[in-house]
Every structure is written in C-alpha cells, then in structure tokens.
Image (cartoon, rainbow, N blue to C red):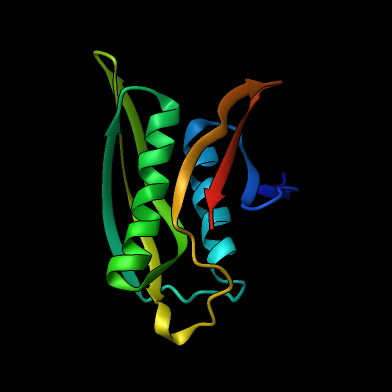
Length: 139
C-alpha cells in the first residue's frame, strides 16, 4: 500500500497519507512531512518521546505534525520513523503517544522549511477499510 502521495497546490505542500488504521495514517503523515523537509534517507540515531492531546482526530493530527515541525525548528531534529504510536480516546479527548526516530538536521540538506501545519483542506476519513488523511503544510 502507498504510504502517502503529494498533490498539486499553488503555494504550499499538500499530501494525502494512507493507512489501514489511525496509527498507520498518523505515522505516514509524519513521514510525508519529514519527506517534505528532506529528501535524503535520515539515519535512526536519536529517539524522542512524543505526547499530544486534542478534542478530535483532525486537531490531534495538527498537534502531532506541529510537534514534528517544532522538533526540527527548536532541536534540529529530523524524523526518519515513527514507532509505538498509541492513540486513545477517553471522554471526548484524543491522546497520542509514541516514539520518533531520527537524526540532527545539520547532517542533511533541507529541501523545504515548513512554517506550520494548517487546517485548510484537512480531513481524516475512513474509506473502504482504510484511512485517508489530507494535510496542507504552510511553507
């Protein structure tokens, strides 16, 4: 199965990520975001724990990808993989925990600097036994 594909957009980066479950679609959205930043294969030298919360799946995706961008901006960390994602929902609050593997960005050529995730055109849907998430990244 295709993990993600980039779509045409006039000014920003737009993609769809796919997965057989929410865990996989969130992982593939993070990988698409990382691929937007750097086209090289990133080594798995550093592991970072991540935890985000939100009121719905779209906000959870926003907060999750925002952390990926924050780690790049603040700690010069590029992700290469996402491990051990757990997504739970309790009393209307979604929680995501997981591990991000990657390396320091100074060792790689950066393709695009992403300013932020946007809610523009964002959705997470289940179609034909698989999940699809659409994301636009502001560059």
